[in-house]
Length: 277
Image: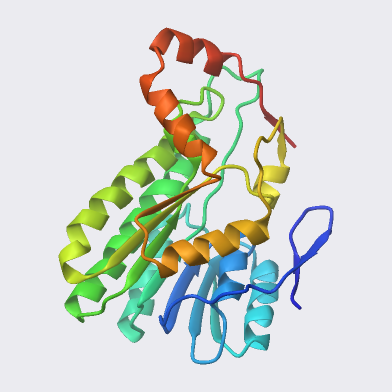
């Protein structure tokens, strides 16, 4: 049994992944210090695997690394903030010059809620979230895909998006738009690399019980546990699915958003109230 500290209140959720990822050997995971990224890192870990764990918190990365080492994996950790695109890409280029990556999981990401007292989100926040959620993971995955093509690797790229990509959220314009951009890039990349047998999977979750969701002060309909999310992601990745939207109800909400009259949609979205701690 693995003990993973999952919340700011130091509550602990214990679980052991019931299934493992596919045969990938060298796996890069961003956002591995907490939440979905950490859980997927542990699910990947076993003998014969080398994990390259990226995250902002050295302390949390050390904890994740130890859990993965306990399962027999080899681990290298990189304390990196993906909001700093230039540094992230320099580190990736060094890594790719020494190793061949056959799976990358882009799980790093963050959101922020505009406070009622502010008219708009700040320029600094927009730049930060655009780089963290969109620019850096897109360029990183493009470089990794190019290495896969050059070396004839039938690899796999996995991205963690958000159902926020489906909706124009006025209180989180940076988050929803960056996730929408990521979603379109991933779908375009999937078509681009298909002829080289490189698999692309976009994970599109609603509320998952992670520190990011725990910060939100609002109703969190249909929230699923991290364990449930992890198992669904593993299954989707192993099956090579193009996209996993979870829970499934958000598939229907996506289509409702597309067909709903703009006036009604604008009214509903402008009256939503979400805060964060």
